[in-house]
Image (cartoon, rainbow, N blue to C red; front, side, top):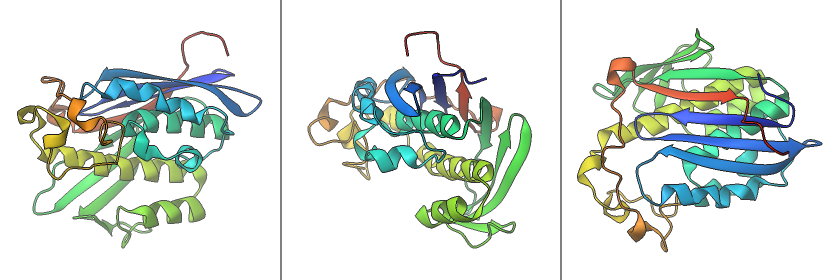
Length: 237
């Protein structure tokens, strides 16, 4: 369970394993610590410093609250995601949770993606490229900000959280189409996502050397992207 005063968010997928420890007092974030366990570029661990821009924000129950407080584009996207889920769970006082997302590689642009919460299947979508083709009420939505806006506005907060996480997993899974083990430096990735994260800032991108061997092919464990929340280690608030 989430303990009073702090929580840990964690994200694991083929390319990343990041943690973020969030501490708070009186409904305000007082400290955020990022941990890079497995990461694609040498520059990723340095994102623990900009993550501290979340200090001072008030706890809110939305996964998007963190990005409303500070831009995610200067952050490690996935370390930031780990902090965002910790903040959202604390903001809603919802306690510990474990999500597992199954995102198969697309075949002719199609895939069926699923999300389980604490071992219980909660969501299953049929995708055609970036459009959800079923079931209702998700049919017709695309994997963009419109889906996020609708989910936060019209769905129960716990379901909305799951929708945003599965949406995020679908986006992250696109990285499986790239053979990063053949790319030695971040600026040589094409198309180049310049300005979209901590490593892809102009002053840093040429310093981002690949950590060869950091990728894990999770196909045999159902292409799992995990987002979890657990108590943080003991420490000062």
